[in-house]
Image: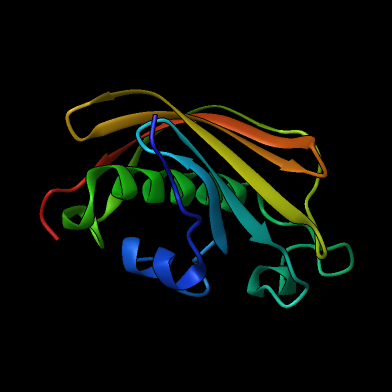
Length: 150
């Protein structure tokens, strides 16, 4: 197991192609190459989705929480594979057992825990858990494929 330094937003943007408003993580911490990582999403009231997603009671859409899991996993894959993988697209293949336990709203900090379940070639399978204040708010098992050509 190899731990690596935390990734700030500038490093994340070198590793994955996502940009505002679809970049769903602000930092990646506790990275163990080939095994696990924790993404951090600071949710603010000025997120564009809050304008139309229950503006009277703003709630982060569950699909965007799942997207934050995917982006955290993508940074783990790129960190594991090295610089040659930077900027490559990682596509969802499956999303299974997705559960949304509690709403996420402005002011919350979401910690997205991802752990590799297996890897075969360029297909990776992960278990993701999103937590706010150590309380599980969402979880899913998903697989994704890293594309070899940019």
